[in-house]
Image 1 (cartoon, rainbow, N blue to C red):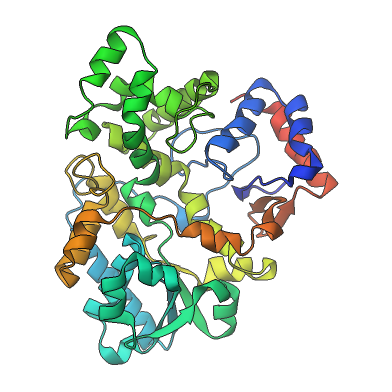
Image 2: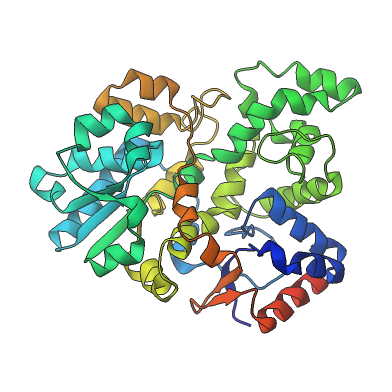
Amino acid sequence: MSPFYITITRERPDLGLWKRFYRVASDKGRFWLDLAKRFRPNTLTARKGIWSTPWPMAVHPQLAMPTYDPDFKRTFGEVSDHRALEIRDLIRQGRRLALFYSGGIDSTVCAVAMLKNLSSEEMKEVTFCCNINSATENPVFFYRHLHNKVALLDSTRTQYSDLIAMGYYPITADTGDDIFGTEQATQFYFSYAQLVDQLRGPARAGLSALQDDPGLMERPYKKFSDLLIPFLSPGFGFGAVAKTYSRDIGEWLYHKIVHNMETQDVPIHSLHDFFWWIIFNLRYTHCALRGPLFYSSAEGVKAAITTYLINWFNTPDYQRWSMANNNNGQKICRPTATHYKWAARNYIYDFDHNDWYFKYKIKSVSLYGLLQNNYDAFRMMFALDSDYQLHWLSDAQVQHEFEGGLQAFQG
């Protein structure tokens, strides 16, 4: 069996395979199936540190984590400006580019960097793929800088493979969340009071006292294990506290994550570091490759990943900036939904001076609209392997390999 770059487990409900897999799996194999419910359709895959999975996993060469450099000094703005100059060089080499622009913070960083650093002639070679939601999410920016000023394409009707056939190199901002450690952290901060309410005794009193601490996210993550374990358990979902949950799964996962952190060389100290590391290390591959899987034809996946797709934030400088700027207010300055991605907010504000966007913009998960286009086609997908072949749960041999991994997996 070839190693996998990414596994996705979306079973068609009418087939009932999940129950069969659950019956034959080892104890930890069952935990892994339950884990898929917690993190939706992706397997957590480590780029660094010890991490076992039920199936052989490989780190994609384009997604390997760069060496940690504690002396990295470039600011987020300097890294973003430099990235735009790299894009300018591609234009000067004759490439036409298409930025998938959602109006969110990550894609707006890409847009700002290019508008700042590219000439008007060079911007003629950049098309913005967006839709009505893009304008709604950031209306001032859209009408001030994009409408009737740059070429636009409807992103709801245009896949990566379509753009490649038209001669474009698509640009995505999919790993922007990974640089800042956003998604799980903001869900946790939002759920903090409800999580504390589940506790009893001294633990509840001590953690409750920290609830309004503006430096909450900078405290050592191990102080919050009584909250992190239930939060990581299926049953809590995306910030919504359930009456019952599978604590044994959350406890196993928490200690597995901690072991991974302790077997690599990047410093992990704070509560926000904990959540940042989950996405920066364990979900990075999924974030980087989900677009080509769901937004390309099956035949075009390899070309999209290896040749055409430009992942804006997947550079050594952005990742080294991320590793060297924990616990200093650059990623999040307060544990609220409007204070995340702080360095990116400042970069955008310095360009467009939009007070509302800077102070009040919250995350809008625009990716689901993209995934919805090909949802049905990929509901039976199991994996993309290192030969860029897709594996489907409808295939009996794939089911056999899937079951074998679950049976043998010991965590």
